[in-house]
Amino acid sequence: MNLRRTWAIAHKETLHILRDPRSLIMALAIPCLLLLLFGYALTLDVDRVPLVVLDHDNSPTSRELVARFDGSRYFATRRYVNSYADIEQDIDHRLALVALVIPPDFARNLLSNRDAQVQLLVDGTDSNTASLAIGYAEALVLTYSQQFSITLAKRLYGHTIDPPLELRPRVWFNPLMQSRNDIVPGLIAVIMMIIAALLTSLTIAREWETGTMEQLIATPIRGSELITGKLLPYFALGLIDVAMAALMGRYLFHVPIRGSIALLFLLATIFLTGSLALGILFSIVAKSQLLANQLAMIVTFLPAFLLSGFMYPIRNMPDAVQLVTYLIPARYFIALLRSLYAKGVGLDVLYPDTLLLVLFGVIMAVLAHRKFRKSLV
Image 1 (cartoon, rainbow, N blue to C red):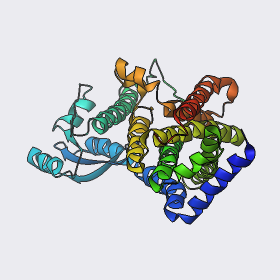
Image 2: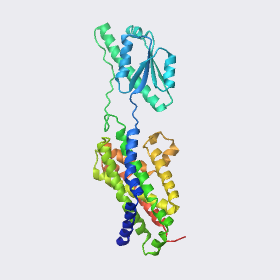
Image 3: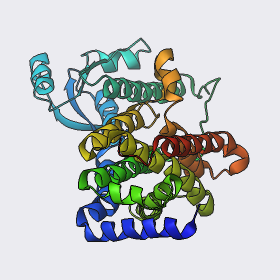
Image 4: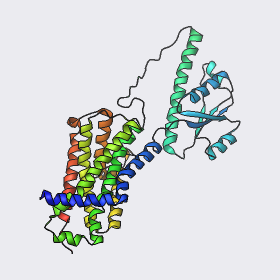
């Protein structure tokens, strides 16, 4: 490979990027915009679920139970209603997702040491939110029941009864259970995959459409030199995007990076190489900017968003789909970033996924090199 010819191609591509504001906007502004939109709008936390209360008992005991719901960060009491018809109306109009119904004999049964029941009506339209809301409600009621039993035992027998089993959970790596600590590293991987492939998918195809490929073919430049020269400017832009995304994640979304910054950029370098080469491959095969752009969007966005483990856990997918996810490079990069951000581990732990990313980059580079021919046919 002749470095002078490679640098000439890289210089030519850099001038094109600088003269085309759309390329710069796509390369720099769109990743920031996507990170802002997804970072603020996308959340897996279920907080402040709107709640309405139908309290037939209206006793201090029932009001204390309602206060437990309203005092937690998981529920927000919207209003008290007088009938099931009011509950149905509020749920139909999406003013409430959950309704707590307390029967008339609630306090009497509790104080008499008899079984007391409350009803929880949940809008199951959003099954994920409904499941989480039911889990939160069950935990609140169980805690209230245990504390009430201890108080009642002390009142009746003069001493408390300690529960025989106590669970003391401790959350590692994300103590506050904030979903953005999981989403932001995954977003960086997804955005880098999409932007890298989209940017380079236009390079070779643009040469064919503008008619300058004939001039390049007539020069002594080799295919590897042309591809490498085309990749270098976008590789530099990709690293700038990674730095911007890391800074936004740290100082805008307050997601800590517990691992090595140098390792972060090393992994990003490997991933960018494969993603950029994949875009070049699309550009070589399609010879049309529109078709290459569509190919890059279909092959990178949908798999990276849906099958990489970013949105949905891979272990919950059907077995056949789980096998397909092994072909998605974003799967490995997301796993690497999440471990690097949250756990602060090094290559001694991350080397299996890192080697698979290296394999992805090598395969894409070899395919792009072999597919390119200095021929007009």
